[in-house]
Amino acid sequence: MGGIMTNILTSLNKTIIAGVILTLCFLGYYFSLNNSFDIYFLQFIFRYIHVLAGIMWIGLLYYFNFVQIPNMPKIPDEQKPAIGKVIAPAALWYFRWAAMVTLISGLILGHLNGYLLSALKLGIVDSNSTNTAIGIGMWLAIIMWFNVWFVIWPNQKRALGIVEATAEEKVGSAKRAMLFSRTNTLLSIPMLFAMVSAQNIW
Ligand code: HEM
Image 1: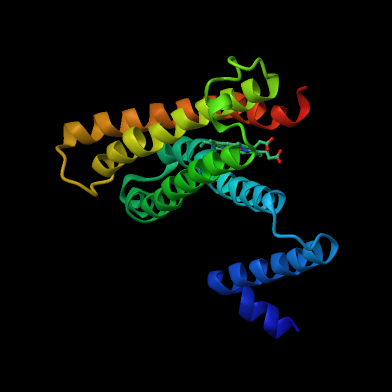
Image 2: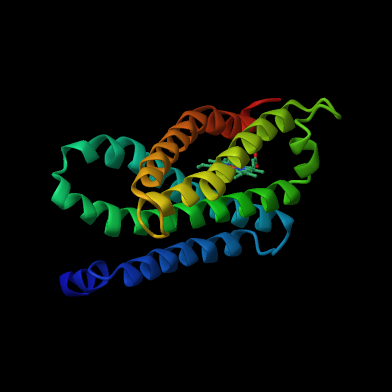
């Protein structure tokens, strides 16, 4: 048993597959109780994908802001490329694609829940406070997604030397990426409040 677990846990791919298999067991149980593949099931699956991707995105945002950025000054210059050339690019890949999956699954979820447009219009047209709450959460998260793809990533590409830039441009880009990453950390706090509060407002 120990051998099997070590074999699984030393491979990231096998670990993920094991997690998916466990989830499929729960899914089997769910179907045994409620054997219909209906709109509620789709909402449930998209909510699950959405929260999973959201954790990946905001988890990496918090890694950058709580761990990487504050500790960079403590790393000797000759060791900085380990972070800049290896860790940060890998983290940024998962970061921006998780942001994309969170956005797409969130929009699909809003549509399946039947209130996408009303929420995007902040529930004002039909005076629906749940849609106002989820709408505020959506807009804050859409701004954050925009910052990731159109501000943080292009600036990080210059700062990390993934695309050509002068030394001066690199400094400016690193600063801009940091400030927008901080902005997203700030926005994540009210965003998640608005998003989860939708379940509790009536
Ligand atoms: C990028 C744009 C986003 C959109 C369009 C969006 C949209 C939605 C929608 C429509 C719901 C369903 C609410 C409900 O069924 O009551 C939801 C729930 C939720 N979202 Fe988002 N979301 C976004 C970003 C995020 C982010 C970044 C996170 C971070 C973790 C997140 C976490 C959650 C959570 C935890 C729920 C609650 C699920 C529940 O209570 O069952 N969302 N979101």
